[in-house]
Length: 217
Ligand code: E4P
Image 1 (cartoon, rainbow, N blue to C red):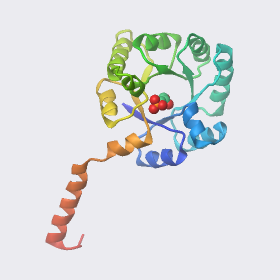
Image 2 (cartoon, rainbow, N blue to C red; image 1 turned 120 degrees about the vertical axis):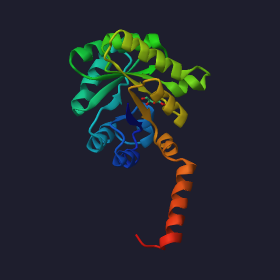
Image 3 (cartoon, rainbow, N blue to C red; image 1 turned 30 degrees about the vertical axis):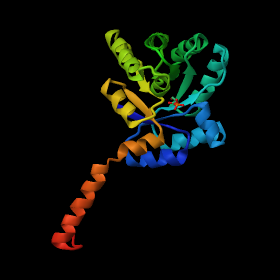
Image 4 (tube, rainbow, N blue to C red; image 1 turned 90 degrees about the vertical axis):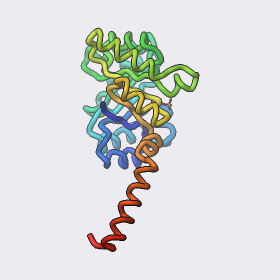
């Protein structure tokens, strides 16, 4: 299991990367727009921070537009992955780009059929949106588990990125059902690191040590 960070905020990326637990980054147009910075500039900075797959998303809706944008994104850095929405036009673009050895991440996946189609088109990654499914009372984790089962049965090499992770529980569940990767927002990382018993335990160890030895050692 690998972890990516789902943000275009380079301070957040630097902080989590410095801990040593992330190996990639995913962005989307909303996340880039939130930073209010130029796409190329943000991506360049991210590639300097993390040496691993970095997803940048296309904006076009027609296959030809996505292919053109995808080639540009791929040219930006060797680690770039072209993020493409799960549509018929999107899959045509995935097919062409994968034949050119350009890595793709099919995004906005909400069902196992969509993931299967993306895998057959040659997607490097598929991103089921766990949080958005669960927002509408669907079982996002079951979708991830179904996709994993299908990929394994047919020995398809596409990797699952569990995306739209909103809670530490969704992250733990995605890991449990075999997502190859989870892309996690900064706020969820922050929550998942902490446990009240860890803090309480550290306090008690320190207090006991100081009672016995003062401030020595
Ligand atoms: C996927 O890679 C997307 O960037 C992201 O996970 C979407 O999350 P949201 O549903 O919280 O916007």
